[in-house]
Image (tube, rainbow, N blue to C red; front, side, top):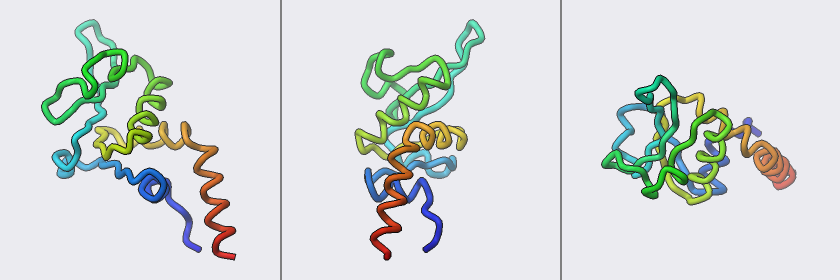
Length: 114
């Protein structure tokens, strides 16, 4: 069996595709991007096609550190939303967030093949 890829797991279990290439930017209704604040901080925001906060509130759509980024990504996946990220490293945060579930999925797939 070929090695199971995390993106394949997301598509199979959640029906979600994550896009990382700029040419795919318009394929998604949700974008998770990095914003720099006027006072020099970096935040992570979930926005819609118009650049507005996706759910409309900072509490739901903005996180202030990489720890919160994993939660934001997980929430987006669990809502079954395809989305664009402006940094492919974000996928590693999501993979860390879903590590146990992904390992369980891989074991299930191996057992089905036997």
